[in-house]
Length: 612
Image (cartoon, rainbow, N blue to C red; front, side):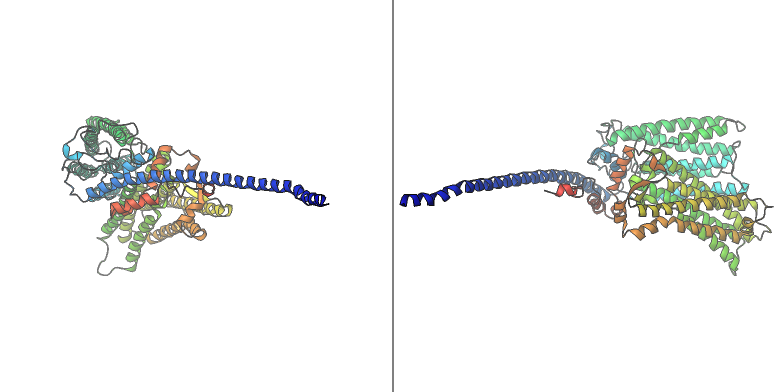
């Protein structure tokens, strides 16, 4: 009995042992699985952290290299202009150097080998000791003096237009020559340092030649004045042969295929050859007799020699080039206003002016100011990678043609306003047709040129369909409005004296016509701000707008962007705070590097990367 009871007690125990063992094994297996999963996650986290540390290390290495350059640049900015030699060799500007090296990944290629050194091909020992990066203002005082001389030459062309009352081929050719002389000087000064004596001397001689040629702007192709204009163009071309031959001598060693020195060497070789050919062209033209029919073709060939695609061999200082164009345009508007006042001086009653005289001068000033507002400097409002100059080379070429057209027709408008001022204050019986044609036609062409320049840029629209529709409505309104006003003002220009209608009523006298043009300019200003108004309505600030406005839109959006230009634009994007460098080069460039880094590790982390 005792044995059987003992067996009975053990039987349930033995029957429950197998389930306990299975459960224990299952628990052990789960714990092992959890440990393995935890180890795998930990390894994955360590691998991700290691990759992030590698990115941060690369970024710090790039920052260290940039900081060394900035320290050298800051030290150089504190030196006197004559240190390193008054006749020192050419140095590449930091804007051109950064733009070129931006495509090399770390932005440091060529940073230590810029400038004319003994190792880079010739030159004196003094120049070898100076840093390559040369901080400078976008527009120097020498550049401003050259701009004044250039605008003076434009005004001489405007005086010839005013005397003839129309535009002919010699006037167009002379204006193109004067503009290309300024473009040559601006092209060099946006790539190389111009604070040495040799550059100042070249700029002075170019100003002499430009001023001397502008005195003959009244001449036709078959006169001695035309020969003097060709002589001025020949002198400037020869100066740039010598200037770029000097650059070629200092950079004759070149360097690696992707280095800045190699790009400088190619650029100097090309410009020296083209300007040499231009010198030969002008010498041949000057040797022709005045009655020769080949003289217009000499001008055409000389103008074509100066047409080239932007950034063909070497990038320039993008922000400096944009500033120079803006300063030249504003100076031209100022000269036009000054010319209006000069024309009005013999007729204006300074002791007791009438309200009509006040109204006329105020409307003329108001019209020029409205044109100034229409001309928007897109250097900072447009991202560099969306700018025409850095998106597509043909778009950049069209951008330059648009600027030439804008400057030329602004000069035409100024000539028309001079005639209009003379006819009004001289109390002419009827509005002269020349003044009407020049003012209305010049205004129409200036508005079209400014709209054409703006159309070269790439605009961005949001991904939200509703918001996208609002931007499209704004752009379509701007397009239709500009074309409508351009057509109306062009029709006013071509309106015959015997025609009647609403357009004729708009031009019964000088004040009415100026008031109509001012009204059209105000409408254009309001329409040009529509896309900005939509952006303010939808987004709180520019950073939020840039986050949603990502789809490219515009005439050139259907064309493929060019990779070298986009790399240059990315390098400029890293330096959007370049304006701070004018006050403190070290502080400004440091802010640039942190705020716009192409290799921002944390900014490039996606949500999936953050998951462990």
